[in-house]
Length: 250
Image 1 (cartoon, helix red, strand yellow):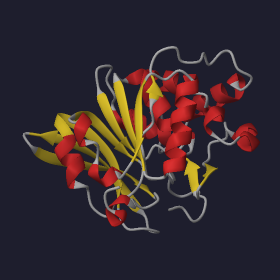
Image 2 (cartoon, rainbow, N blue to C red):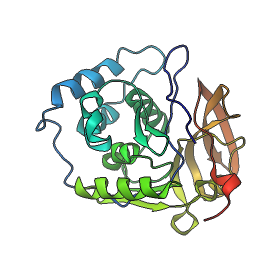
Image 3 (cartoon, rainbow, N blue to C red):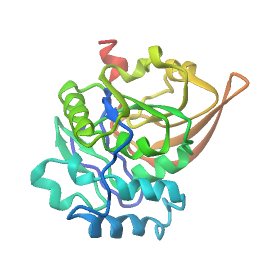
């Protein structure tokens, strides 16, 4: 689990937690133009189009980021910092990831309107909320049960109806809901979990960091073609380790 807050200097660092699943998501999402944080959120999202390494150009992703109320996914005491481009602690030695990395990973996943997406590492529920308007269904797994419960509550309160969550071991995926058109992983295993490859639909896409704990890892984009996996390295990153493999199935 996280022992320190991430930095975003020489390389982008994404520090989410390893995962459970969150219920919620879908229609009736809050309007980005009707809350006190709108101006700061818009300034933050507009800065993504000027970034060098993680530039965001997908208009659908930009709209989703504008519509997602990040301040609702952080502790009340930190809401004033919610629209700074950095991770924030959310309890249990975990953090909500910095918004630019959330946007970048979402863009690289190339979500489609009819997709069913699996997320490994619900955390606060923020990434699931960003994905919600872009796809048909989101299934999200969180290994820290109190965080899974809190994320589910937040997503439900915000009216997300197409996000389904549960507490569990993300290394094993969510076989009952498989196959998935896309999978997004927010913690770093030392190897790609076989269950996730199996649960990825033919032609499906997976974005996942892979590498040892406390070292620079690689963010990969995987595509499943003719039953085989093609992978491309996207970016050096540093994620928290995937803990489910060691802990075993819940």
